[in-house]
Length: 168
Image 1 (cartoon, rainbow, N blue to C red):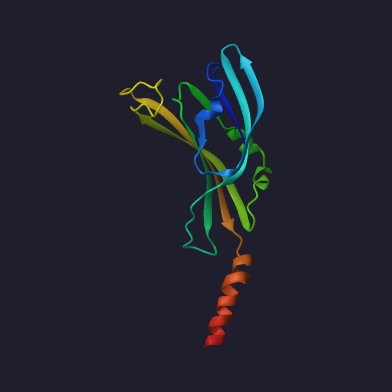
Image 2 (cartoon, helix red, strand yellow; image 1 turned 90 degrees about the vertical axis):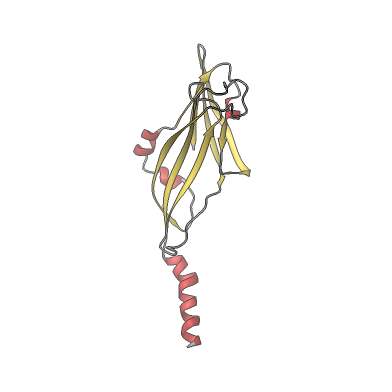
């Protein structure tokens, strides 16, 4: 997927302030696609790909619906770093769901959520003033998927039913 950053030109290594919380560190890429300066503002466009860890609830198996989530935490206060995802492109681009490789699952919908975290700690950054409430943002890209019923039925449910039937 792609994301933009917009910040003051003093923060040249802005990618150090963006953490993908559930990204598998050994198998990922972050590629700078575009960098543009407009007076004191620096815009950057990145392409990120990789494997992301998620916890699943399996109580409804084999007809379960899950939500895959890509979590992004911004380590700079929100007034110093702006990050944006293009929701309108998600809404307009029907084939976007097909780009995600999720074998044996149907892809239902995708969307972004934004959370604000207000804290009065420095968060390890000496530029943040301790004791002053500061807003930090976190984002989540969410993809809802539903398990295709045929494969688990043929691989698990049917064999277990046959074993139970033979055992009787």
